[in-house]
Length: 189
Length: 189
Image 1 (cartoon, chains in turn yellow, cyan):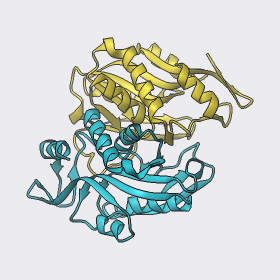
Image 2: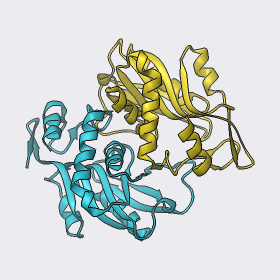
Image 3: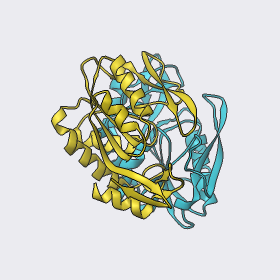
Image 4: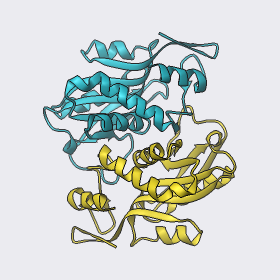
């Protein structure tokens, strides 16, 4: 997606050969017009899949997932990484290991909002090692629902996330695929 | 806002005389069409204020804030409650006490995205004791920016949040004002 790559070139900051900071438009400050374009692009790529629900993970997944949901006319559920006062009943959860932070955490969704047979699109901001997406996939399967695709805003293609997801049979669509972060420069696949 | 009140009546769950659960459309599952209507309503109420930026707080503030930002054509920044790998430079923060959870936590924004003189609209999902909004207001003032209004999706008017904000001179616009949660019923002001 050319507008997204352009934005990454202009406003992304390469913090190390592993970490790209996109706090200016995706992870902290959000550009709503770009998010709308991202939502339209995901909708275009997945419209044929007859999506019932979108599932994402707080906090940075919410914006692209919401815009996709608006385009497709379906609800979005964001999995919680942190305890919530009201998220109590019928809880489905999975463990997610973060290689960057080297911590294991739990992500959870209320099973009340996912029905068996639902056709679910997973949306997330980043794909690196694939752990978050696999955690969401596990929760969705626990509900008896079906994952019909995984939409990623920025894929770090030099990390194994895509392979991990594809070898389990998931279709992955990434809007920007990063080949390398080197010498402060982003190169795309 | 009538559609919102209708949704609260139909899908809100009164967990106690203090806690209303709206996980079905706002806090966990999100109804994107309702969020779009909410964004349009906030935009209508605050358009005359020449807003430069919207500030909200993760995670449940993001959806209504993003939709308002899209309508007004301005960026949105979400304050973080949790540490982030990339949120490191020029950090502005405030302590926020949660009466419900009885814990003190820190919310933070990167000062890189707020400029002195910016006219800022604060958006949040709930107003109860006003602590989150006051924390955001403190951060915005630290940046030398100006708070020109506070937009709230659901106000629990039986708690002191609105008074706390108004006595500091802030304009508060709430789309649904709840008078009481009693016997499992929601009554609006």
